[in-house]
Image (cartoon, rainbow, N blue to C red):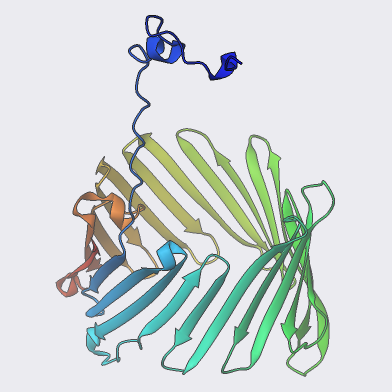
Length: 332
C-alpha cells in the first residue's frame, strides 16, 4: 500500500513555500533590553544651616518585590542649638505592606492595604506596636457612580467611626471630637470646589470656621482672593507670568498688613534662581538652584542638586548669611 500523501516528502525540484519565503522574510526585531534598576541606591544630603548630614540607603529585595530603606543622620547642632541628630530610621516597603521602625522610641508602625470585591472595596489598616493602637479604614464605591463612602475607626474602638462621603467636587466627614471638659460632640468638616466665572471657587469648613477662596488663572495671570469666617480675615495672592522663564508672585494679608513677594527666573531646566522679601520677618533673600528643583535627583545631571541661599535682615545687614544645601545620589 502506498504511503499517504500527507507523509510524502515534496519532490527535490519543487521548493516548499517555507523555503521560498525564507530568503525574503525579515528577521523579527530584537527585543529591547529590560532596563535594570539599581540594586542599591544611596542618597546623601547636607544642610549648612543645621550642619546635618543625612544618608538614605535603599536595597531592592526579592527581585524588586520589596525594598529595605535605611536613613542615617550625623552632625547637627547648627545655629548654636546643640541639638542631637535624629535617630536612625528603618523601613521595609512592599506594594501592599510596610513596616517603619522608630529606633528612638523602640516601636514600629505597620501599614497594609488590600483591594476586595473586584477593587470596589479597599481596606487599609495601621498598627503602632508601642502604643498598642491602630486604625482600620474601609472605602467603598457607591455603585457605578463616582462617589465613595469611607468608614474609619480606631482599634480598639473609641467612639463612633469617622464617616467620609467623597464626591467629584469635594468631600465632607463627620466624626466625634472631645472637648476640654471631656464631653463628646459631632464635628463636621468638608471641602467643596466648583467652577465659577472662568475660575475655581473652594469652600473649606473645619471646626466652625470657613475659608472661601476663588482662583482665577489663565496663561499669564493668577488672582486668588481668600476670606476666613467668622474672623473676616481677608487676603489675596497675585501671580504674573511675564515669559515662560520669568514669574512674579505677591501675597498680602489685610488684617496683619503682612506681605511677601517672590520673583523667579528659570535660566535652563536645571538652573533657576529666586529673590524675595517677607515683611513679617523684615527679611530679603535670594536663592540659586543647580539641578531641577521640582524634579527627582535621578533625573538631573550627575544626579546632584545644589541650592545656595542668601538671607539679608533689613534691620541688620551685617548679619547676612549664606547657606547651601547639597543632595547627591549614587546607584550601585
